[in-house]
Image (tube, rainbow, N blue to C red):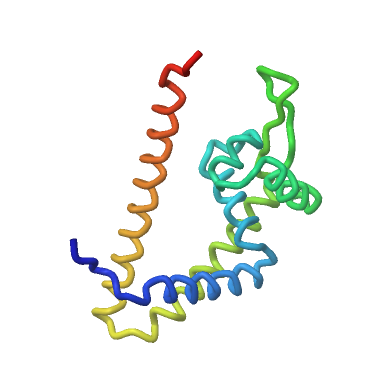
Length: 158
């Protein structure tokens, strides 16, 4: 199969990621902090540390340290799980939602600045391409979750 991607795609994605990191810095968030806030906003406003670690593909101690910093800033709150008081849920606070909104605006402003350098037809193509990458990422996550569920469902040797 011939790739439709330019050979330097990784370098382009790295430059774009760096540009987004700069925009997030203006909103006083790191990319990892932004992802946690975004995940909490998408997941019905709460998640256990294990679920967050899985979504971000990091260890539970790493997510704990990340959430500690967000909690100290009042962006995330830890609450006992109503069904199992030994478990803790992470909840996006109103301040966290406001920080996420500011970060989204900063990232979008940076993307608008970059896309304004393109010709009108190229702008449309860039927007459509970004939507397609978003869809590819969703599909990759679903595939990973499906594979993980299948692995857990397989009988284990005794």
